[in-house]
Length: 71
Picture (cartoon, rainbow, N blue to C red):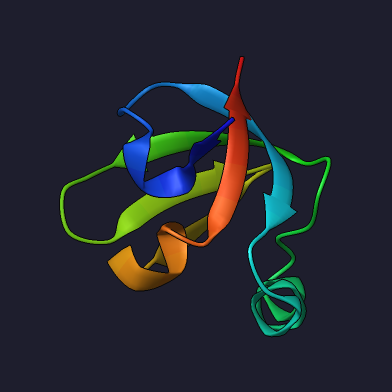
């Protein structure tokens, strides 16, 4: 498992876990939850992911606290 900040543009990944319960709650407000499949569409700076038809920019600090499995 890796952190979201390590994903490369064009890669698909599954959200697996969060390093902190507060981060999990904060991410859920934006619809980012464990088990979802995302695609990285832009870097560096914030990590921009696409989930279904929605694009979400995630800051560097937050992206380091979200664990993923690259598909």
